[in-house]
Length: 497
Ligand SMILES: Cc1cc2nc3c(=O)[nH]c(=O)nc-3n(C[C@H](O)[C@H](O)[C@H](O)COP(=O)(O)OP(=O)(O)OC[C@H]3O[C@@H](n4cnc5c(N)ncnc54)[C@H](O)[C@@H]3O)c2cc1C
Image 1: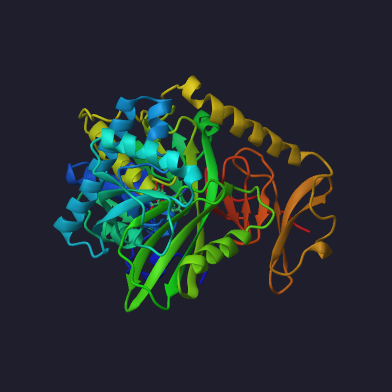
Image 2 (image 1 turned 135 degrees about the vertical axis):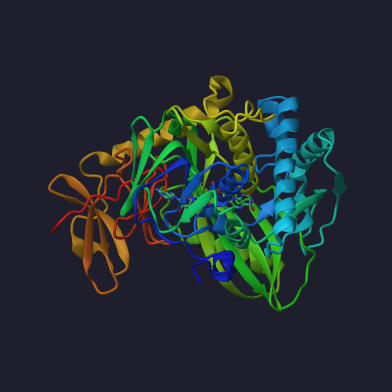
């Protein structure tokens, strides 16, 4: 099934869609872990809040994640230390640890049924080549007071050279948690609307958010949309990647819960266990690439299955899915007021955003209540870090500049609609214009402009997800042109044959 194991299993709740014009103090756009936690905290502190979600609560990346919560970071703490400082890396670990504690506190207080449990985190090398990475992370983690130990065996059937284990991290079902928390938000202070996509924000004396059937006028807006919607200079420092996941049902093997990360550079994978009913699963994630820049998207699923079968007695691959993340240029997320007055953002989480999303909500709750937050300067959205950002900034923006070459004449994938198979899409040149043409299973052709409505890059057909993906800033559109995710507000423009 091409759906995450969490989304398939999470309880159904539903909120109405917006059908009127209303006013509030704070409008939150996005009902993932960031938006829902921010709504919970702000409503708890007495602020009037409206949350607008384009689809359903936790229907974005949060519901497609692995469900791991940890103080460490995907990029490794020792990298943060060498790019920034020991103190910064220590503060990253501390602030993230506090966010994990908040999740645990809320799960306990509200009895949220989301399989939350404290588990160990492991980082391992399969060959001696990567042992130095492990050693550096052990040194860094020990320095920050994290409870680490060195191992040479894992409780999984994987032969390792060296591993680091840190107790006290956590796991849950992210979709069940976000939905469960949304139900516990103080409804006297917060109204939640699903299926209410914001397609425009007008910056008047106050901010006016437009949806199809109503508007919300607010003094402050939080864009909890994973990446900010619209055009922001910050987007030159945010790099969109896709990553793949499978949930393999096991014939045999009942392994201890934990977060297991390998250090392989070419196909880094993360694994975790999960029990659903009487079945044991192993989730295997990995294989990231820049959005819209692949020839064979399905190859990642095949490689993950191969990896799973190499180590485990796999019955079948019951779920497979992919999701997006945004890497920040200088290694830290951007949280706080954006370059637009009264619009707050929380983005650049890489694959660590369940914890960073909760941390963002804690920071924004303090900021919007006029309280000092110990971490707000560290993650300030308006920071300028040219030296720390330079390497990624230059590499990624040269890559973006190259994508714009696809706008030139003669760079289409097909010359006629006949070259497109049923269920597939191709970029076709029609009257000197690039069209995104999708042929559905009945042979009906759907034509849209191939020019991304965010910043005019040419979109790419993603054969695994049946979507049009923008290789510049990560906007994604359905085969028929509607926005799925990313910074674009508007669908691909319609074209008639
Ligand atoms: C494969 C993968 C695995 C991951 N695993 C982990 C993990 O184990 N641990 C971890 O810490 N992090 C993980 N991450 C990262 C983490 O999932 C994300 O950083 C986090 O979920 C982001 O949460 P969010 O609430 O900011 O965004 P989302 O969950 O994406 O929520 C944003 C919401 O905004 C809505 N929205 C967008 N545009 C509009 C609009 N115009 N109007 C209204 N609503 C709108 C969307 O529909 C969506 O529901 C993983 C990422 C990937 C790709």
